[in-house]
Amino acid sequence: MRKAKVLDRRVYREGQVIFREGEQSWAAFMVESGSVDIVKNADGPSPKHLATIAKGDLFGEMGLIDGSPRSATARAAEMTVLQVINEKEFHRLLTTAEPGLVALLKVLLRRLRATNDALVDQRGEGLPAEIGPCSTTIPGHGERSAAFASHAVSALRPA
Image (cartoon, rainbow, N blue to C red; front, side):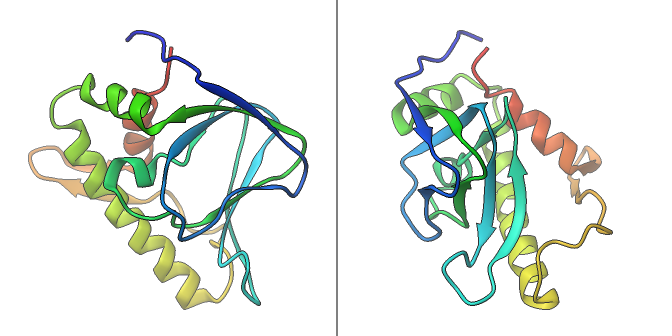
């Protein structure tokens, strides 16, 4: 895969919001240095920490893939440098991906969004540590784990 153009590089201070839950997706981000916390209901009375994104990881791609608004807020956990991949460049990467990958990602993202919402609603707290990797059954391919989805998304990462 050809290296994606980094159209923008941004620096965020600790605690600075990168995007807010409910906003329209306009870019995906790759962590060059630092880390990013992903938080559900960040502006509410009981925010729920979903994940911490580390160096080399991609985030913010869900809305670009399925057209949905941001499902959570992203906030710099420390001084963080991000490479910004705008919507146009991200879609170029998707169009060069293996056939069927985008449809698979949309199904997995729909299930991931539903699972995140259900866990936050049921538990009233962040994602419990004792819950293992998600799995899903893909017709003709048997059960696949969240690692499979992660691998599929990593195939879209710039080289």
